[in-house]
Amino acid sequence: MQREFSHLLRKAHIDALSSLTYKSVSIPVTGEYMDFAPAIIPIGNMNFSAYCILKNQTENDDSLKCSFNSRSSIQLHIVTKFLKGTGSELQCEEISDLILQTLFISPGVPDLFINGFNVWSGRKEGGRIMVDEFQDSRIFTKILILSYQVQQTEVIEPIEGNLVFDYSFDFSLS
View 1 (cartoon, rainbow, N blue to C red):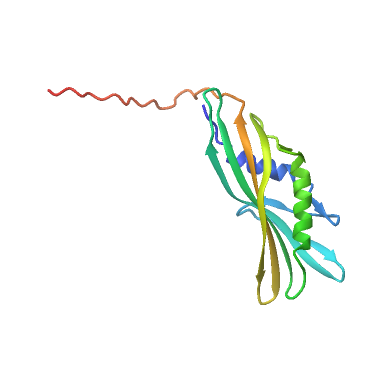
View 2: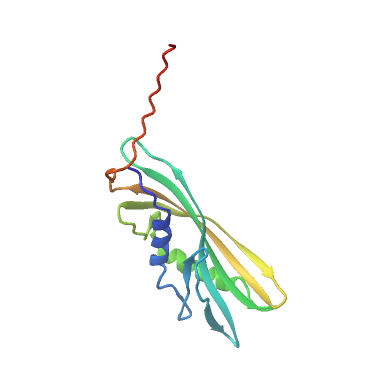
């Protein structure tokens, strides 16, 4: 039986990046809609805050006769927030570099572990910077788009008591 792995892939990212630090400060990495406190990082004579959120995950079935396979992509939003008129995209890009070094130990080989699945053929599909100006702050967001091939290695037997539907119909013209 095919298994759902979306939440497991997000958890694998969070686990792999759990020790992410920038300038000796731990950067929180979280799923969308989870509570967290951003890191406060000193730089020069000011501070900025930083965090990373996993968003916009997609999966496409790529199964063969012999195994369940999927192509999956996920976005990592690396966010840095400065006082208005200060900061640059440099800190987002430096944190992005640390993330890529952590997730991809060699070309195409992601350092992600999911029990019952192989995660392989990982790559950076793209990235971009967005800048938002507010009344009191400037926010830089680096969006990394990462993709993987995921193969289910553990075969799950049907759970006893599952409903079985009979789709046979009586087509007699009586």
